[in-house]
Length: 251
Ligand code: NAP
Image (cartoon, rainbow, N blue to C red; front, top):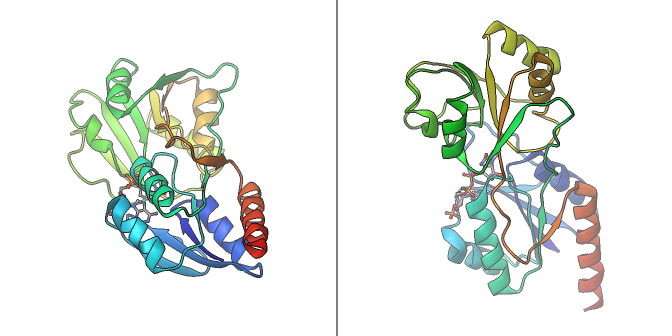
């Protein structure tokens, strides 16, 4: 079976690693090419966009793909919509692997918002000094905030307009609780902003914010495409791949 894994996440790398080690699976991982020096998965890797749902449908056909796993980031909504359309058209089985949301804990001061624009609005009411941990994309939603100061953390420098009062911190997780608590104290942070990305790599900031008693603006995930089967763990995705291998073997 030739499996296309749409990646860019740790789960995608873990799945590529495990599936590559099993008989009967040939893995091709696809990366968008956003990060300058990405952590590469095991097996074959292709980089760059496909050219929308139509380009992806052709790629699946031209490369004899037997099944697709969408293991992209929970906020990568465009590629998830494209692959749902492309797999639907081609009749190729598709599974979506999405790690669970972050749950808040008793005492946490979370404010959930639907999108980046709402996050910028709400954050402006919550404090002067903001720890912005939404990644490289979307920082422009905060560019109009003249009054607040931002500590902006991302793997690569953010593109587009930025808020005028800021410091950029280039760093890649996993992050430890001590590190996050130190940053919050050192920069006298009033409010943390995050996407509800889930996963343990960047979760420590939430505990650190809880301990410091500061509010957290949490941007909700975009909805998943309708009708796509979803699992939460790499083990469940492996089970699905094995089931498909048995089905195809029978066919
Ligand atoms: P997006 O808005 O859903 O995608 C925009 C376009 O980028 C897609 O239409 C597609 O171009 C291309 N693309 C996205 N993911 C791709 C992949 N895995 N392989 C090939 N092309 C891909 O996605 P995004 O938010 O820019 O995220 C891009 C990548 O970064 C994803 O792989 C995601 O897992 C990873 N990532 C995203 C975030 C985030 O917060 N959004 C955080 C961490 C990692 P075409 O239409 O030309 O095919």
